[in-house]
Image 1 (cartoon, rainbow, N blue to C red):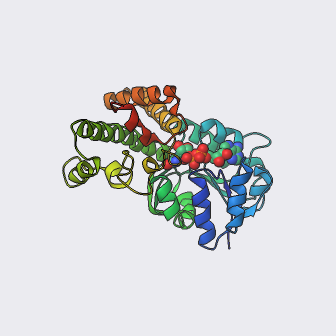
Image 2 (cartoon, helix red, strand yellow):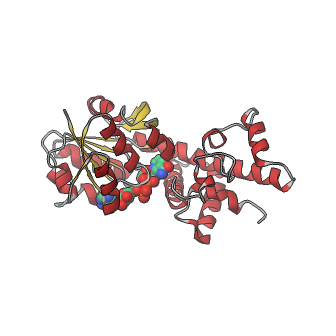
Image 3 (cartoon, rainbow, N blue to C red):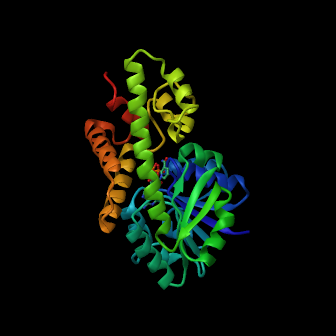
Length: 295
Ligand code: NAD
């Protein structure tokens, strides 16, 4: 049996680690938030007192952190997990970060004799809980092959996008599109409501029409249209506005580097920044629905 270390047990990492445990893997967990560790311990994982302790006997290390600065400080340097890992370990970073940082951290691991892939995910907290995430991997074939049996416990779709960092580029392109779909869907629903239509009926119409998209199918932004989504829970849990803004900044940087034109994402970014400045940083990203309403 493999020993797996899982670091970063937030909205996504918590249910992902739980799925590894549920599938019979031996999992050691660590997070800065003690309660997040306790929840996994209650489900059968072993708790580590530090990231260094978590990785010391691990064959595979999975990380799921907010942003690049967290990933770099966890992996690199004398106290970093690369310096404390077991010989031959494979690192899988599932956080969404910029491709350059993924390459830098990956090179740090590979130069020290370890294997590393970037493997950001799509599918949201519901996908994390159900074990149906999409993993988008960047790295060499050997490392990707080693990662697949572990990722299969947490996901339904595994893609190999290309070399180190390619998973992050693919993920940013996807989330850039998601921001446009979420703002556009919110705008359409609010227009229907302002004209006296029932948002549930309007959603059903669009689901069967040419406006159909993932936000309507899985993540309706209007409260009480769908059960078990953040909009029906005061926009709690889910994917925070500040994380969507992080991803949009990364996508715009990536666009700038190659001179790409991204006017739709620029509009979505302006809306999400405004929404964050109005005090919504920690709410789910579907709360953009409120910004676009008349209330
Ligand atoms: P989150 O803020 O809920 O969780 C992050 C966790 O990392 C927290 O529990 C935090 O305490 C922990 N952490 C931070 N630094 C740490 C450290 N040095 N050591 C140990 N733990 C540390 O965020 P999330 O929503 O789970 O997202 C994680 C990543 O996944 C982000 O990069 C995000 O962009 C991406 N993502 C999120 C979603 C979503 O729907 N929430 C979907 C796809 C991808």
